[in-house]
Image (cartoon, rainbow, N blue to C red; front, side, top):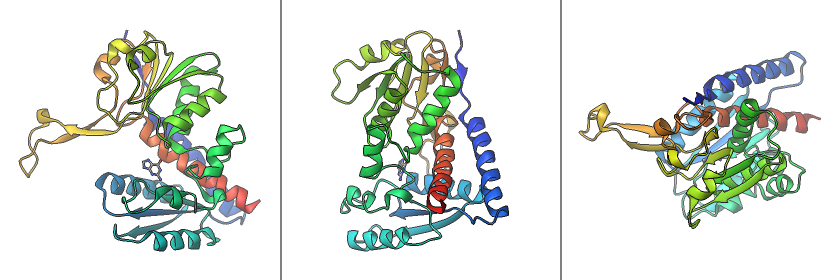
Amino acid sequence: MTARIIDGRERAHRLRAKIKDTVSSFKQDGLGTPGLAVVLVGSDPASEVYVRSKLRATEEAGIQSFSHHFEDTVTQADLLAFVERLNTDPAVHGILVQLPLPAHIDKLAVINAIAPDKDVDGFHLENVGRLATGQPSFIPCTPLGCLMLLREELGDLRGRVATIVGCSNIVGHPMAELLLKNECTVLIAHEYTRDTGALVRQADIVVAAAGVPGLIKADWLKPGACVIDVGINRVAAPEKGLADDGAPKTKLVGDVDFAAALAVADAITPVPGGVGPMTIACLLLNTVDAFCTQAG
Ligand code: GUN
């Protein structure tokens, strides 16, 4: 058996095309243009790449983008004052502060300073509480993208056993809420779980979001499982030769031993080209939702 490879790029491409049409119809109908502000603090190379991709996708969809870059010496007070300015800017419908933030800044204070109706990441306490109590507004982009892929692959998720590996506020926690809401039986493994393999072996659905390359072994998987790999890990790839600085070239890999898992799973997302593109498409979706809520 060779697993189906779930093409997140193609799925995201279709979603982005629909969003672009919607945005264009808003403009034709004189309703205005959705706007997304993206705030980056410091110069974390991975964050710079993600932010660039988010801004490019925003512009391609016809959404107005506002990019703000602060040095990593910015004070928390200045950052909070800036978020407050975005909260009251009528051209900005969605606000995203890229994480991680430097250690001297209290990230929860910044996230909770964002107006809940502009919190397109869905990280504000109010939106987290809404998701947990079945009154969701903004659903965090990565779990929402994972859910869309799962629904498209499997249809109804009721009664399936889903194991999530990793319990971050960005992915693991909201993913668990979403799968519960979809009537799955949800197991969560984290770094203190004694036998993660034993939880994964029970799962019809595996969501790997631990940030550990190759953590999920093929022999942990139940034959026929649907595997969603959220990990994006940069590792040395000596087989690709040396870079200009003499160090081995690198490649991106997920949290699942992909090559071996192909022989066991029914379907699996690749890294890159699986969940990542869906995260960006869902950010655009949330921004359009924010625009509609604020316009209506
Ligand atoms: N850092 C890693 N993933 C995310 C995300 O989805 N949103 C934000 N704001 N920061 C991140």
